[in-house]
Length: 408
Ligand SMILES: N=CN[C@@H](CCC(=O)O)C(=O)O
Ligand SMILES: [Zn+2]
Image (cartoon, rainbow, N blue to C red; front, side, top):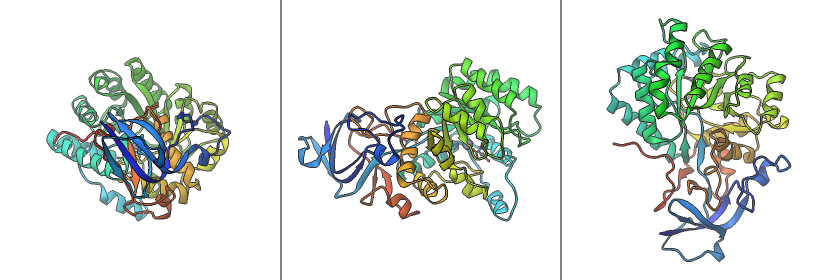
């Protein structure tokens, strides 16, 4: 079944004319990397883009959608989220807005609520959050564990996450659970917990943040990551969120796909990330700084140094309770001084690179038909009209897998 999507006022392909994404080509600015086309059409077959071109040259198809001048972009690739949890920490947010600092200690509150929740309840909560993200234009979503922190509940979180996405991340090393012995907990995370979780996970992650008494040091983080690699998992790091630290350099040293947060970086960190631009992505999560009142990361410094950047939501109950990628793009433009083009590239192609995916984050023949549509004529409206309900995943007959809905 071939489905024609026509009447696309602006098509953002994030792909070069040959369909290849020139993300590694530093001679191209982000505006060129957007690969804009006007009056475009595309054909989708079996969830894959089969043809892209001028609407006037569109081939015949079995069915058709006319978008009447709306913009189409690659669905957002949200490469960092913590959606498997129960409970509520709005009081912690309110206290923070009144001046309380964030140190990761509230994670224990979510762990208690998540352990107490039944499996059906957790599945329903996750399904609702995934549907909300998709309704805002996200079609690829990474989901972490990290609110179970024992073998049974970490395994359960990853099993549920794997029902909704293939991008699942084992984050048993989120924090040392309240009352636990650090050494014994690390033995558990790198031993039986990893064994139970690895079958449901693609990635392993660690909260490498020596400035937090709850999170992990460089040596502890290295141990977690090496154990994960040994179990066949790819590597990701939470690093440099609360203060300067070893996270970014550890991610580069071990060839991690991404180091996320990157709020407090030294010049040596930035140099290391620039050298590793073909391997390790720096993923910025500005919704966290918005919701913690911390300083924003310096995106311009990273872009100017040639670091490979992604933007993601980090949707979680503690530091950023929104999965809205349009909001993240608007923050990146307004608060991180990224151009609209840089922000959109980072939220699509950048996220795909952070997940080492070639089949999403761009609109090109052979890529997944995971698309977002804007109720607007151009992508600039994402930042120009923040908070407006403009973006949604484009639902097509035989469309891309995107973020799969959870079982009811
Ligand atoms: N920094 C560590 N983990 C989350 C916050 C988790 C929480 O506070 O519940 C983050 O990415 O910001
Ligand atoms: Zn996170």
